[in-house]
Length: 430
Ligand code: AMO
Image: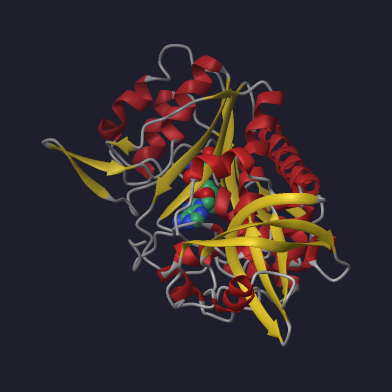
């Protein structure tokens, strides 16, 4: 049946704004039910669910006949009158005068009801359809709030948003985990982070931030690693690690506050009880002692997965900053603190690392020494090292995993749930 898009757009009302009178709506068929002389069709659009109710004899026969025969997720247009109804979602229903099927859906390969039990890999194979689910959309509506809140927070802090290259000539986080790309006749890599560039900018523009995609050829398929992920990046001149940890804490608190304000409905749909996190500071040594007391194994110079989990259990709804981190397990650009320790930190939230950062090395000779200590060649980092030869202030910053933060805020069991179209070892489509 023909559907006049232009006319519809002039008349269209969102379901949430419709209280009474004649309306024209369009959306996806959530489900249909037939109870003898009365039939229901639940329709969803960007603003919610609305019930279409047809009583035999009170609507046209052909409408009554077709109402429960339209396949789920088909796109339909409905014209009718709004009536109040105690049982219907939002307390109102539409009695239809006209129904048009705009796009009929084939038999669905996955369950997209609110009670879907379809497993994640299968859902991801049909992600475009999985995104018809209100619960799945809720995750990405919350992510949208997060992205906006990060920008708002950073602008309020006086930060300048910058755009940095996604193709790099040498590693920025150590030699491994790089995706190689052919760049004309040169070897290049997809960016592992914007680390080296954001440092150069802090040395000129003082306070910068970026929302940046990173690519890492992670060897393992885990529930917390992606091959393509996004980071909130921050870098600031005349700062040490404590200054930027405080910025990070306030940034996460701001993001959570905005989500609580704007996404009540989505949090309810997901059954998530979110709280503005508290903040705790601990040295690596204190954490090591605490883990020993709790019988949790630690790596010598790193937190184990179990230790991160334990911190989440011991300090729920808290950002735990672990600082005075062993130098041996921090990247080459982190400022040493004496012989064995560094000015680097990790932030653990609900049992998972969401961010790492620290004060950086702004002294070329020290940087060369640390690169060599990490088995890297200073000549591969010439322009980066040179950038600190013409007036480089002490500076510090951090990178926070956008999907990690979302996963932890919403208590998602797998980081893939926090990405629209995840890229992992096995997945390149859709
Ligand atoms: P790091 O490598 O620790 O530090 O990354 C920062 C944060 O990004 C997230 N993250 C990931 N999330 C999903 N999948 C991955 N494969 C993945 N790798 C990292 C984590 C992590 O804490 N340049 C430094 C940051 C800095 O010092 O400014 C960096 O990239 O949440």
